[in-house]
Image (cartoon, rainbow, N blue to C red; front, side, top):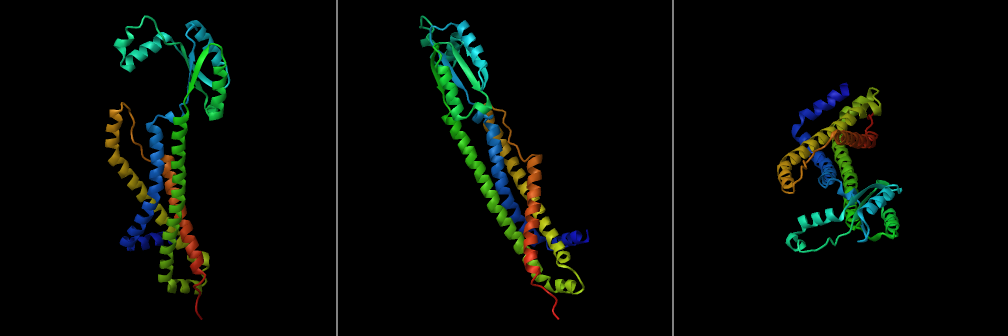
Amino acid sequence: MQALLGALGRLARAPLATMLTLLVIGLALALPAALGLLVRNAESATGGFGRAVDMTVYLKNGVTLSRAQQLATVARSRPGVASVTVISAAEGLRQFRKYSGFGAALAALKSNPLPNVLRVVPRPRASGPLALEALRRKFAAWPEVDMVQLDTQWVMRFNAIIAVVRRLVLLAAALLGVGVLAVVGNTIRLEILNRSDEIEVTKLVGGSNSFVRRPFVYTGALYGLGGAVLAWVILEGAVLALSGPAARLAELYGSGFVLRGLGGRELALLFGGGMALGWLGAWISAFRHLRSIEPRA
């Protein structure tokens, strides 16, 4: 406790130097956290459509609605199928008339040219490209089926983009984590050099390396925690500044999306990671440089 309070006191006595160091650490921690927030909010804004894979089974024109419902019952019993919805030819024509803009032209038709349709949603474990292709071939083999439409290319592209950004987050976190280690290590090295006389006296009266190292390690942990708090403040400020424009943009698209900041799990990871990086950087620096400072005869 005495070493911890001493470390706090030394940081408080040099506010400008402390704040500059915390600012560097905070910016280094804020960047990967901001990228992580970007990924999470992007997935939230799209409503998870990157995982919403389905296929459309077009039945032949001679297949009745009752037969389509029987086929839907058979399709629901297949492994890998989560749900099956029957879209009748009349419902399909009504939707097409509503959204296509060709209502007047469709009114001239003497009969409904659209077939009955089955909308099949696979289970998450059967949403891979190979499993989807196997499921498509099974439905396409039915004699009542005219065509099976399966468009997974956009899903694969979206998931690939998200995977690249996630990998970028990990890479940025690793590189900037090394940067935090370097900043804390260099700061602790300078403090050790400035207090070399005090360290020599402490060792002269019997202080061990671990005893001498303790306040420096606490200082590094405080740097890491303070930098994490500053990174959190930066991120919350960015979310607050962008929440208004993001809400207006979502409203224009008819969405209720709300820009979200760090949750409890992310905050714990940020604070714990900052403290761990500060502690490790200080420990490495102190372990390396304290051995070279020994009492002189």
